[in-house]
Structures are given as structure tokens and as C-alpha cells.
Image 1 (cartoon, each protein chain N blue to C red):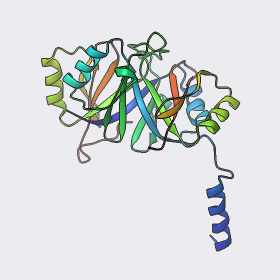
Image 2 (cartoon, one colour; image 1 turned 45 degrees about the vertical axis):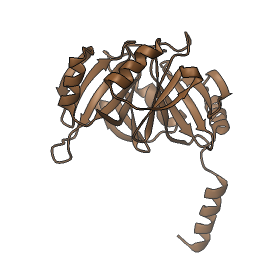
Image 3 (cartoon, chains in turn orange, green; image 1 turned 90 degrees about the horizontal axis):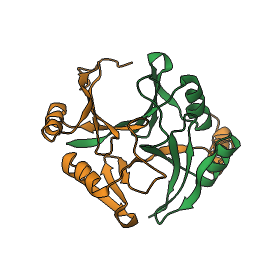
Image 4 (cartoon, chains in turn purple, green; image 1 turned 120 degrees about the vertical axis):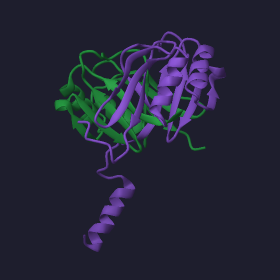
Length: 148
Length: 118
């Protein structure tokens, strides 16, 4: 690229000419609606072991930092209710067998029993409101085969 | 027990309509496509959004919701409206962010979000 073109490109880049306005940078958060914050917190903190990072709206919105992401649970009324269909969060665990054993010990319902794919191990559980949550463990690089 | 979000999966009923929406309306770039287009992954920074079409897994107007972090929330909302997206919740301000809520063609809730500088 010539110096002139490079400068032009930089100028355009800085001023945003030609750049799209609809730039999605990241996942802001994943929000899970619940109906009973005490029961939900007992599950997300007590059973899944998540550590609370923010509490807002007088306790109706609670956030958990997970690596680079934020998982939020919220109880905001009838405009946002739980569902046993639709979007679901998949959570990456350290040790798949231990996680499954711990969840079974605590009588967490499994909608899909643990299974192996070419690239991962997965199971699907329900939170106390029936929202689906995927428990996921990617295989190590040397054991992984293409999933798709 | 849990390290991070592995991915977030969004259920859709029409893979072609969903592909157009997520790739053209939202301008997400597909990183992996499998199952003859019935599973498309979009990497957003370190996170993967998977859009999947399977008869046993239906979209929902309720339930878990994905919020997308955008650079310019006003411009994003304007652009989405120009592309025919209607909003259930117009831009609102909270102490920590601005957000607005819309739906994909299957009615799944989505949010555009802009964090305030700390």
C-alpha cells in the first residue's frame, strides 16, 4: 500500500467513513430470566458455584463474571419470563465427569444425558425455572476431531 | 466447577431467513458452518454465538437473552430500524449502560447494549 493510500485508509478508519455503523464488538452479557431470585441464586451460586460480581436493581439483577463474559440472572416481572425452549447458555467446565457427578448428587434434572461428540462432551440441565443450560467440555486439541 | 461461557445457542426455525438476519441485518461474520447450514457459529471476541435450526429445539419469545455490545448504540438502532427491525423496548438508560431490545425473525429477544465508561 502506498504511503498516500495508507494515510487515506487511516483517515477513513479514524473518521469512520465507509465503516459500518452496526458494529457488534462483543457479547455484552447473557441474561437468564428467573421468577424467584433466592431460589435462582441458591442454584447459580450454591449448585453451579458461580461467584457474584454485581448486584443491581435492589437484588432483581445479579451478575456473575465468567472469564471474559457476564452471565446475568434477573427477575423483572411478566415481560421477561423463563422458557424451556429458545436461547441457551453453554457453560465450560474444568472437569466434565466431576461436574456431572456433582449435579446428579444435587438432583439437578438433566434434559439431555451426558454424551460425547467428536470435539466435546455435553449434557443439558434445567435451572429451577426450567431454563436449559448446557454443561460443556471441549476436548483437548490432540484428541479433538472436527465437530461439523 | 465452571470456567467460562462455552457458547450461547440461539434456536431458529428457518436457517436461510436466520442466516440473512444474523449476517446481513446484524452484520455478524460466520466463522463455522455445519449441518448443511443448520448450525452457524459467529465468533464475537472470545465468545461464540451459535444459531441452530433443529426440530426438537424451538425458538422462544421468553427465556435466555443475548445482549450484543456495540460501538455506537444510536447508530446501531438507526441502522436496525432502517433494515425493518422493530423494537419492543426503545433505547433506555440505566446507571451503567444504554440498551434497547428487539427480536430476530423467530421472535427471540436480542439486546443492543453500550456500557458507560467507568
